[in-house]
Image (cartoon, rainbow, N blue to C red):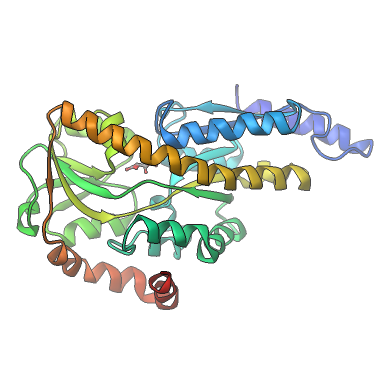
Length: 330
Ligand code: GTR
């Protein structure tokens, strides 16, 4: 599929519109979807299953074609392509969305969620919906927020040594996602945060540009990061949900009924992905152990939580009410 296809279908729909049919009523529509992760990864699998349901519900009129494993570039490129309508569905992290919609940075604050159950309750509830709407209503973001997905907790891994206490991070160059909040988080923990795309990480670890990175077990495992960074330390400093977004320019060409159907199936995908997530997390931990990864717990996370206070002040200061509402979710 080339990006022109969606636009050509758009032209067909306009022609159909001229004779009074709703947009895309007659046209066969293939939605391009992308993800940095490979086939079989929970987010990829959930979007593919959503595509099958969409196909069935529309008698083949609308389907999803998945481009996994960074085939269309890293997350930055995915977002840019969605913004111009070159692809329709991008599964990205909330991480890079913080600079666009400030409220998302509250989800990006280190240690903001007590545990996975807390995070799930927040994204499944009114706060989750409000933030999706904030993204959809954003005047220049060019994206529709469809749903969230699980991404576990992020832990630091590196090639040098286990991180058991805060001081162990000193001097380590750790790749962080592209959002200043994350670099500042790593720096406040004593390490050296280096911002780069997920697509550049393997190369950077291989060449020693960074000593390691931080992520959940399934990303570490499926990206085979253990080949370059065998110390995996359970810092659990971030718990960032994933997002499924739709290109706004493409969205506006859909009929209201099709929008509602896609919105509903995305919400179902949010719940379906969660089951796949927990299975995958367990599989990944097993594979990591088999691969000889040295996994260590961090017995006392309190010094880590204290160290990131400046990040909370800087990025959370403007969103005190939202933070309180999140904390009040039991
Ligand atoms: C993963 C997430 C990706 C990407 C990646 C990263 O956990 O699923 O969307 O954000 O982390 O570190 O860039």
